[in-house]
Length: 156
Image (cartoon, rainbow, N blue to C red; front, side, top):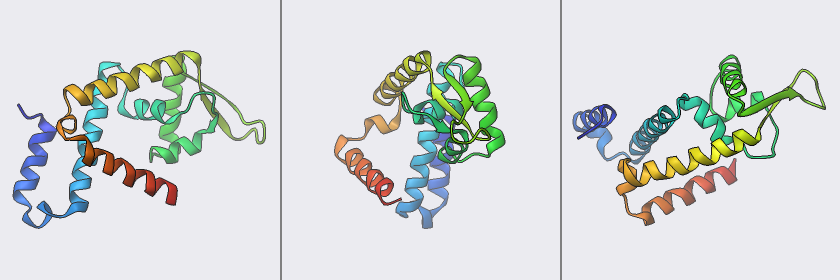
């Protein structure tokens, strides 16, 4: 049975002949599916997709400025404050003033946050293997896509 996002994507594909074979459009559709997958896993853990994305992007034992996290998840600085407040309230991250500039707030995973992040990663992989349409794709194309993403990151 198709999920609502799959039905929408299918309808868009069927009604957009000029987009159907466009590889950039197909990558956009893939990104939409991945957002849906993140939302599904986040919902299982009673957090928002943005909160999950923040937890996955934060590296253990690494402090980053809140505005850097805001850029990483492409959201407004005022929105990142709400994400950080909630994750801090749950005990997954701690916020503190930067030792260099007290106007800058940095965030870091707590021990509970590191453990929860590991649980999210494990459940995310499990979701892909069992429920995501992407999990049904053979590994060579996925590995090729992964290499492309790494190359793009290296060129930034």
